[in-house]
Image 1: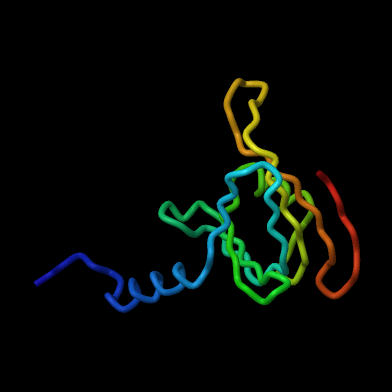
Image 2 (image 1 turned 60 degrees about the horizontal axis):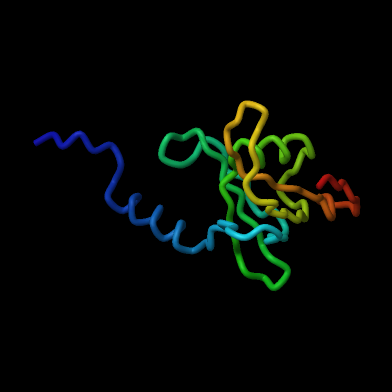
Length: 123
């Protein structure tokens, strides 16, 4: 009796628990800020396996996560953000690009590099 299922049912349960463990940051108001130490960067994840998920530990110890859209992914790559870095991300609201398409604008600051203090600011 072939079902075509390649993953065990338990593995689906593990994914649900992992997703529920993290509060995903979805800023709605201009000026919202998320700051924390990067605990994990998971690439090629999500439904289409083309997304990047960043897990943070806030200063109060609470976990948080954010999905990197094109704007944030570009900024993370530009700043060479890696696990262990402390970052702050500020939401600037929706903007229109030169093509006329709307996008969500963010600023990113590296507060501390993993293993060293450094400021790498760009807002």
